[in-house]
Length: 364
Image 1: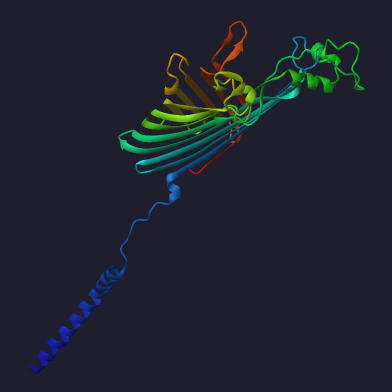
Image 2 (image 1 turned 90 degrees about the horizontal axis):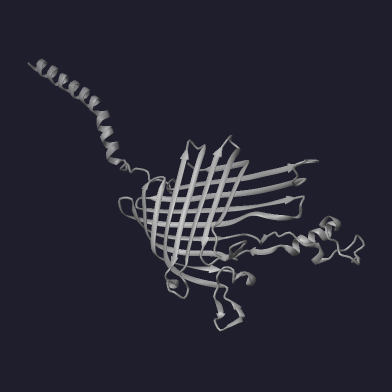
C-alpha cells in the first residue's frame, strides 16, 4: 500500500513538472506582453505633407547668314531662362500652395547693336485653404507680379536728327543720313536715344490679397471666387505713371505729377488648369479677372483687368525639353498709342517657343 502511494506521488510530481515546463513559455510571453509598452502607430513626418518641385529651363537660339538674297540680320542670338518652383502643403482639411515663376531673356541682332530685353516676368502666388464641404474651401490668395529690369520699345533712330561724330570724335559739317555711316559707338547711342521706356522694377507692380471660396472638383482644375479683393498697383517710375492710369496728385494741378500707387478694392475670379501626362507632357493655364468696386461710376468709366497665362512643357529627354508660353493681358487703365487707332487700351499678347536644357527636382 505504501509502495502504491509513493508511486502515485512520484507520477503526480512528474506530471506537474511536465506541465510547468510546457506552460513556462506561455507564461513568459504573457509577462513580456504585460511589461511591454503599448504599440503606437508612427506619426507621419512633417515632410510627408509637403510636395516640393523645381523646374529650370535655359533656352538658346541663334541665326547666321551671309549673302542671303532674301535679306535679314547677318546674325542674331537670344537667350532665355525660366524657373518654376512649387511648395505645396496638404494635411487633413488644410492646404497651402506656393508658386514662384521667374522669366528673363534677351537678344542681340546685327541690325540693332544693343542688347534688347525679350522677356522679363516675376510672378509669386500663395493660396491658403480650409475645407468646409466636399470640394469647397475657405481660401485666402496673395499674389505679386512685376519685372526685374527696364523694358523698352525699340524705335528706329533717325541719324539726321541726332547728328553723328567721325572716328576722331569731331562732328562733321553735314550729319550722316545713314546709320551705317556712323561709328559703332554712335550707332549704339542712336539706338539708345531712340528707345522709349515702357517698364522697370516695380513699374508697374501688382499685388493683392483675395478672400473667398475655392472650388476644386478635380485634381486638374480649381476655381476661386473672391468677392473681397484688395491690393495696390505700384508705378515707381514717374514717367510711366500716366500710361498706367495713375491719378493726379492734385486733380486741379497737372504740374504736380501723378501718384506712385493706387489702392484697389474689388472682386476677383481665378481659374487654374494643370494637366500632367506621364511626366513627359505638362500643361498649366491660369485665368484671372478683376473688377474694382471703387471705380464703378460714370466719371472713372469703371475698371477691369484680365490676364490669361499658358505654359506647355514637353520633355524630350532627361535634360532637354520643348517649351511654349503665351501671356495675354487686358487692362482698362493701360493706354497705348496704336497706329491707325489712336490712344486705346489694346489687348496685350506675348508668346515664346524654345528648346533647351531643363533640370527638375521633386520630393515625390
